[in-house]
Length: 223
Image 1: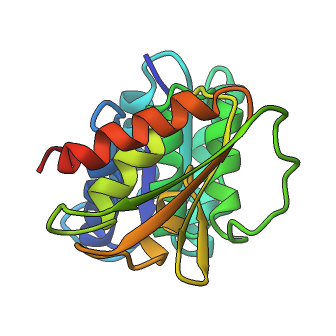
Image 2: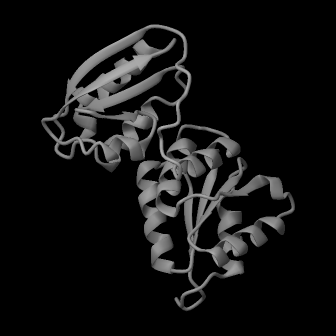
């Protein structure tokens, strides 16, 4: 049982769309929309958010994301009324990017705090300098042969494949570089079919990280 997500929006359709996108990245994660008022009008509904919050909690807690200020207040009120408010976190994060990043983190089995941090970090970019883990460094050049390159689904598969490894993995395309653990960063490279990307992995599990990525690329990401 992993961390669940709730997307709180003033728009029923916006919440549903963001939840659908995030769920595509993380098929085993419960991502529920809580948008609009009863009858479809714009606004946020405390009862709807509370119900989604309850349904999304499978035992590991829930991260809530929101679009505008009053949605934040509704989400926070729903959390405050829980029997144990520590089971849920309202993340101050960009709605779409935060939901995607949180979903991928939850799919990787991370705990509530880690999933919330991933959502928030999506709003400050992925250029935060981190100390590279000790160990070997492996560099591989790969050609993307799948039809869509590193778009949403392949990017999510690649990022998820690295979950739990002690490795810092970077993907380079020309002068651009992305943290391979960041779906948004990978998508931002704009890598397409036929592009040659460079994989640089360092750390104790660098070899395993490269093996997993090679397996995905050679299998065309299951396309």
